[in-house]
Image 1 (cartoon, rainbow over the protein chains, first blue to last red):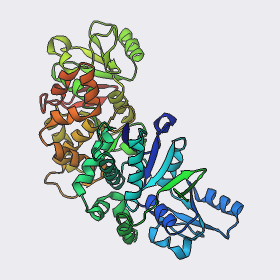
Image 2 (image 1 turned 180 degrees about the vertical axis):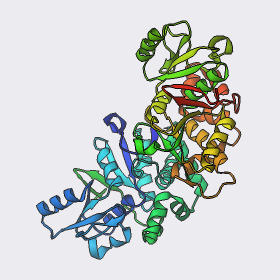
Image 3 (image 1 turned 45 degrees about the vertical axis):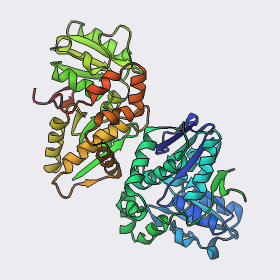
Image 4 (image 1 turned 60 degrees about the vertical axis):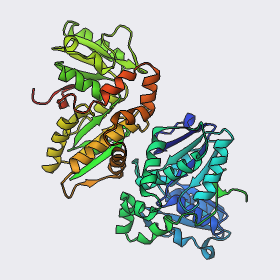
Length: 244
Length: 244
């Protein structure tokens, strides 16, 4: 079995994902927001690369059961119902709704992973639920790829640290799991920060940018280990909770 | 001033390198081989992406003062004078010669960095010489980019660890040097392995592949801190020693 971590999705080719379970990580903030939305009762989250695509889709679906959400350069999109702060996705707002989510990096990574055996959305907030699923996959002989979305084509510390936590949990007590250099590096980063996930997020460039833009509260939510026991799976162009 | 580390050169755009000093790292083995060749008296090293291009160039130059060197999938290229093992580039072989070097990742990274203010080739074997030059650049207000070549589009532990050593040396005692998340992660990796560079190389995927292919001795050479006090600079389509 293989357990690999890749940084960035832009160069992913079909052979990278074929036959694998792919876990997409965008800790700040898309992965966290998706977990929050589904845990709080959203029927589905549909990822889009651009707000225009999301708006067009919302018109097709009818607006009653649909929420437009997302960000452009961290900020909420004018005319949308919600931004990309996980705290906005409360049960009152999202229960029973389909969330059309526009984010740059997280959506791009999910869409790039199409063709994988399964695609799950991973973060700190649903760590135990998703790592159990990935561990089961590896134990049954399926290769796992953890795909760090990164930010604007570049490596991000928060995605790498989160990936490292998954790597360490999946490997624990299992022999014969081959890993790549990306997985080795991520495990080092997770070991370094240990339980201080908040510090890891604060030390990251994107964390700093969010703090500067007034979204500092989001970091605490994104660092909330196991806040939401959901396994979000992407299938048939939407992300739903596994088992529902 | 900025001090950034990027992983992979495939997505580099001109704006990433403009006005910067770019240090290209391909520890296993191109960066090391280039330093060895120049330290041992080669007049220049000319990087090529393919053996066909190198052969065509050798015919133009006349074979007397030219050596064809390089690798394809780690192995020497049939008909070439030298492979890509740094130990082959002895003074007896290379003094006064122009080396036409075909390697996949290192050559690609050097060529991708074209347009930078300066391009230097960095490794462990010429660490002190190159880090002094980069530190001077940062102190004088020039942004530095360390470009890890990686392997077949992917992150490699050995390039990241070596980059981390440079990051730590350049930053030491300087205030106000902004770094990216890549630099932060690389510094962590270097701190973890400390002086045990040989172990870092042995733990890397490409190091393992080289050992399996019979090039285990190359790892010791590539781990040889400061074996060669040269600063290889790329200019006018060839790599020469700075100050000659």
